[in-house]
Length: 248
Image 1 (cartoon, helix red, strand yellow):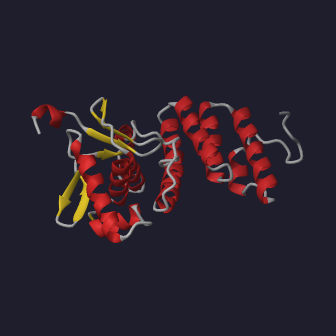
Image 2 (cartoon, helix red, strand yellow):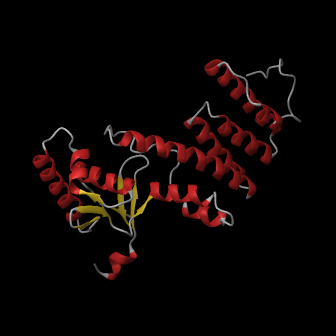
Image 3 (cartoon, one colour):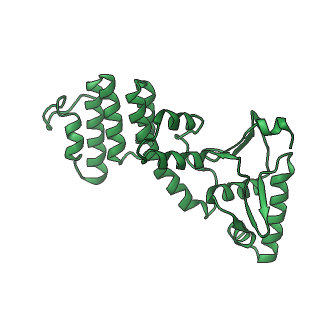
């Protein structure tokens, strides 16, 4: 590997469509190699060849699945850049590959630590698209639990990003982040709360109240419950009597 290759970072995007970039150039991989790269990237630890083969080709006998794994590994590393490293019977992603899901997990851990510099944490998240699902067009069984875990991480991240952007005076971006959280989980009250707070931070009390009523309508229609008292308190200085409805 020459100095020019070292200077061009490898980035792997798993939110949305699979995309592996070296600098600005996309590395095209066949589907079998994509699935192998995605799996080792998501599990974040060295994985044995039999384990990988069984997950990726569950319908095949062990000998055939191991042969398919060898082919996928060769294809993953054949295109000018080694993406997966080997250590005996175990495989893992190359250490310097930046993965959007790993950045998301790092952000989730960072925001819970005292003393975290949120400006730095937000900057590290700048290339991660939180509006996208984890490989939404893939139907592999091993992705089911991973997808739900990432969905929860995205919700928490979007709510926290909304808060930090509002505090920084970046109100339009904060509102977009909160809207993404509401779209991701319309029944999540904390997502609505984040959006209401973003509207209030910008000084738009009417929008905050309108969002409260939208939330109330959704919760009533879908779950037959009323918004919590804490959500009501957010708009208490703006709110009209509960029986009054806003037009539209």
